Length: 492
Ligand code: MV4
Image (cartoon, rainbow, N blue to C red; front, side, top):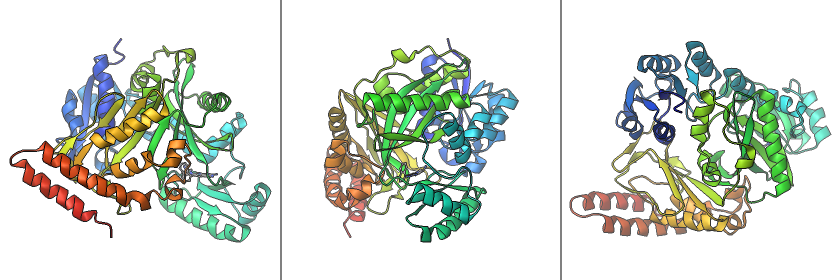
C-alpha cells in the first residue's frame, strides 16, 4: 500500500527530511526542491531527485507556486507535501494544485481559506457550540461600537487582526480612555501587515495557557484526535518548549477540549492533519484558531501516541479511510520538545547564522532529534534559524525533563550560538518542574536574567568537549570558534 509512487516535498530543512522519511518507509520516491543557498543541504541529498527552484529569496524559490507545480509535472510527482511555513497554509497554492491535478497533502483550498479568517472561523465555531471568548460579532467599524462591546464584556479587552497571526495588530486595552487610540493603532498595523485592516475585539485573558489538539480527518467523514499539546512557553509568539500531554489535564477537561476540537474539524469539513488551538484559563477552553498544516511540534504527539502523523497524512491524501479508531489511541508517558535555534539568548535572541564547526547530537533512551544540519553545514541567513527539534520521551513528565537535561548535556554545537542554555534554564526552573506554565512564563520567571550562570556552564562544557573531541588540525579551528563564542558571551 504505497499511496503514491512519487511525492514532491515543497520545503527545506528538518521538515522536508521528516516528510521524506515517511515516504522512504512507505517506498514512495521523493523529489526535493532547493534554492541557491540550499544546493548542498541535507534535504537535497536525502531525496531521490532534486530540482533547483530559484534564488534565495522565498518569493523566487519556496514560495514560487507555478515553478513548483511545473517541477511536480516534470518529475512525475503525483502529490505535494508542503511541510510547515512557506506554502503550507496558502489556499491559492492548494487551489492551483487542485486545478493542475496534483494532490495537495493537506485540507481542501476552501477549508484553508475559511480558517484563514479569524473573525469568520470564530463565528462559525461559536454557532457550532464551541466555546469562544466574548467580543465583537464581526470587525469593529466604529469606536462607539467598540466602546459599547468593551463595557459590556468588561476590561481588559484585546484587539486582534482578522487576517492576523503572530500577535500582529494585538493591543491590550485596560480602560475606556485607551480604547480609541488602541483601535486606530491596530487597524493601521493590520492594514500594512496583511493588506486587510479588519480588527475585532474580545475579552483579554491575563495569563492563559496555550493548549492545542492534534486532529486527523479522512475524506470519508471520519475524524479522530491525538490528544493535546501544551505550548505555553514562548517568547514574542515564538514557541520555545512544547509538551504532550498538558501537565494540567484532567479527564473532564480533556474530554471537553478534544470534543471541541473534533467539532471544529467536522464543522469545516476538515481533511488531513490539523491542529485546533485554544486559550485555556480557570478550567475553561476557548477556541482561538485552526492551523491547517503539519506543525513543528507534531513530533511530541508522535512520541506519546506512537502514531506516525506524516504517514497518516499520506494515506488520507491518497483517499484511504483512517485505519485508526479513537479507542486505539492512548497516551503513553510524556514528551517534551525544545526548539533549538541558532540565536543568541543573551543578545535579544538575534539570529546567529553561520558555520557549525563541530556537531554531535545526543542519543540514547527516549531521545529524538529532527534536524536538517550537520557538521560543517552553514546555516543560511535567508531562512529561519532552527538547528533542530530536540525531543525527549519518558514514562512520566519528570523522566522526560531529566532526559532533556541529559540530552542538552550531550549536545555539542560549536560555531553558532544557540538557545540550548535557555532550554537548560527552563528544565531547571521550579515553576516549570511543577507544571506551572503559561504564556508569560519567560518574563515572569525572570528566565533571561538567570541565563548568565548557564552560559558560563555552557562555555566550559563546550571547551571540554571541543578538547576531548578533536585531534590534529581541527583543534585550532575549534579552539578559535570556542574563543569567539566565549568572548561574545561575556556578561556585559
Ligand atoms: C489572546 C491572549 C489573551 N486573551 N487573546 C497571541 C498570539 C495570537 N495568535 C493569540 N495570542 C493571544 N491571544 C485573548 N483574548 C493572549 C495571547 C498570547 C499568547 C497566546 C498563545 C501563545 C502565546 C501567547 C503569548 C502572549 C499572548
